[in-house]
Image (tube, rainbow, N blue to C red):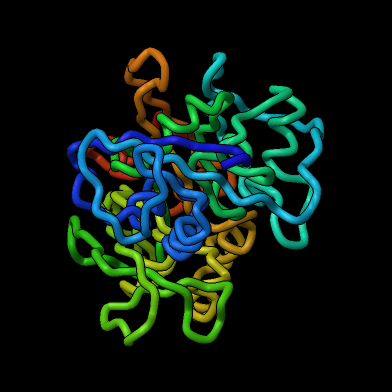
Length: 343
């Protein structure tokens, strides 16, 4: 193995998993099929030796993977403002604005969070790959909120392990279309590529033979119901591509402003709104989904760190508008939930 190596230690909780499934969970930049191909190519070592993708793991095993190189040039530093909530020699916690892409990819080599972080920090962990240095977990372009980034390879490995073993707590505030009747619920539906539109994901309760799906679970708590929308808090148990957006759309309550998974519903609902509310919805820069809470253990000191961040102003104004005046009993539920998270 001669490329950039990322190593993981298998915990007792992860014992019994297939090697490819473990890597897909521990390293979010890899899919299970990519992990399988890397294992077949001899780029994955289990306790120092090549192992098949289907090998079952035991507690204490060491897994090393050579991350695939990208064909295009490495991202270059670009100076731009960053809202940094925490930084030391190991990790940076960022409050990402909506409309900002996290890392370079197909058709984009600049203007991303990674470019800005390279200008700020000089160097990030190589573990995420050439285009995703230090990126342990991602947020969609139009999703705002908290993101942790590793500055060293050792930090990347430990934070990736925490994500893969579901030790990182990530909570999101979102406005969704319609009134969710349950006070709380769990959406436990696998996610895979859409069978026709490959850039989209889909929740699939009845999988077809030969279709690759990954388990996905989202916990949802209703915070307040409005006439046409519901304010929810979502907690990720897994971290699949577009997971919250796909799950909520599958539930029949797509995220407000989501043009990929809720455009038709959005057009129908906006047409029914009063002009003031319709203008606020149309004025959203991204979609009404914000990663407002993040908790993890410091990769070096093992100290528990937790952070919260206010929703962006456009989403905050919309929530306040929907909440209306305070009632005789005090603040509305939305105001209670968002008071310390809103500008």
